[in-house]
Length: 69
Image (cartoon, rainbow, N blue to C red; front, top):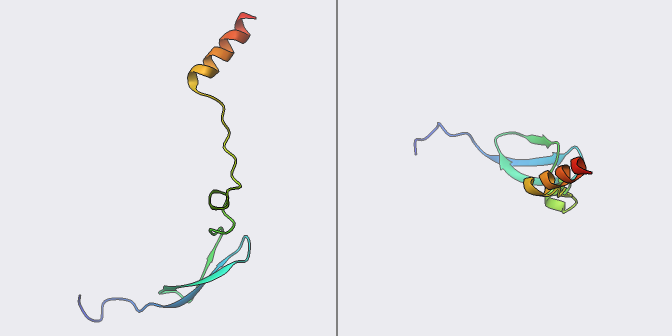
């Protein structure tokens, strides 16, 4: 590695604007503001609901049954 071309990493505070959680990491910036973090993001918290509409064939069969009725 060449000397003098790499930025210096310092301890950085990352804060979430959504839930207010903070944690420390290393970065070239003094502070980082994020919109969502792992504590409030639905995928990581398990709050996310998956909508199961069925497969294409099932949806086709439902439309076909409605049209026949």
